[in-house]
Amino acid sequence: DAGVIQSPRHEVTEMGQEVTLRCKPISGHNSLFWYRQTMMRGLELLIYFNNNVPIDDSGMPEDRFSAKMPNASFSTLKIQPSEPRDSAVYFCASSFTGVWTEAFFGQGTRLTVV
Amino acid sequence: AQTVTQSQPEMSVQEAETVTLSCTYDTSENNYYLFWYKQPPSRQMILVIRQEAYKQQNATENRFSVNFQKAAKSFSLKISDSQLGDTAMYFCALRSGGYQKVTFGTGTKLQVIP
Image 1 (cartoon, helix red, strand yellow):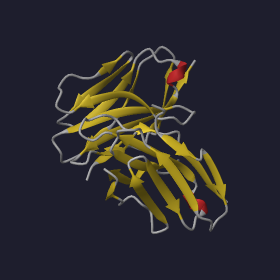
Image 2 (cartoon, each protein chain N blue to C red):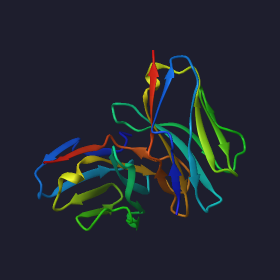
Image 3 (cartoon, rainbow over the protein chains, first blue to last red):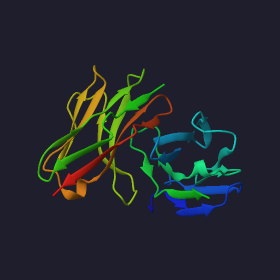
Image 4 (tube, chains in turn cyan, yellow):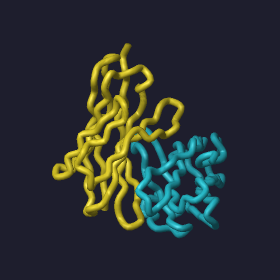
């Protein structure tokens, strides 16, 4: 398996633009997590899905952020409109619920909003 | 709610020496897993070691071992014979709850000095 795949690896966008981050979890995994990493706050859980259903989105900073998981093999995190303070590394991770394994991480997307 | 606290933002250790990274956590669940992840400059999140809460024996993986104190809700990581390649951010993580949410601490930046 190729592991968790995120795209793009790097994204630079102007303030006010819409940004979409993509994630393909490991095949067979039924939990998916979106994290944001910054120097100030470390690794924050934004939202997580179980069997494609959002379970907890309490970490989503504000209404500008939204996440979807239309099927078991794809998820998106959208920011609209983007702001400079959204600049961070965004990680997607997946795991299998039922067997208490660790979460497997993608390479992350470094987002810079100028 | 579940929380993970790492109180040491930065640490350093001489090559070949031993270092211990601290982590405390809180959860109301009886069944949970604890993990230590390593994040080198490449940004990839790498699992170092895991501990099942129901196991009294401390987990060990080569030079890495944990001191799991369930009553105190403490989960420290000991790195023996530190190597230059151990230089990285280290994150403590807790997985618990019916949907097995994964929560991370803020990380400890470890520098191994030659």
